[in-house]
Length: 115
Image 1 (cartoon, rainbow, N blue to C red):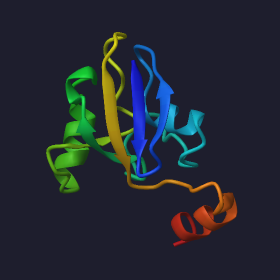
Image 2 (cartoon, rainbow, N blue to C red):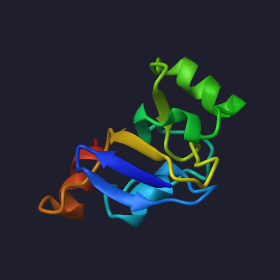
Image 3 (cartoon, helix red, strand yellow):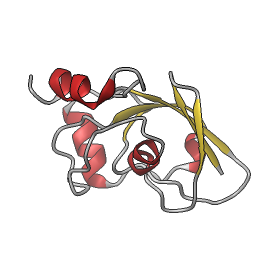
Image 4 (cartoon, one colour):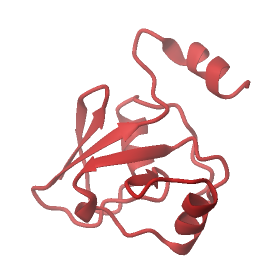
């Protein structure tokens, strides 16, 4: 299984049970911290471009959060959307909050956490 994160076009191998947030953190694409899988902030929101069938279905708490916050059908919380099968599939995901290597952690934190 491989997951590609857009707009960075960075691909990483994935295993069953890995969350999209964990995978994005693993490749340094995001500095969003996990809320303990209790959707509180939505900063890990992603858009699933391709391969949604390879992800777990929404649990009640993710569904409720998505409904309350106006998510579109293809949007998920990265902390709760996990790889459900380990095969040769690919998942393409667009990150809402990401870090470009040249931006650095400080700029991201200033724009996203201090507002």
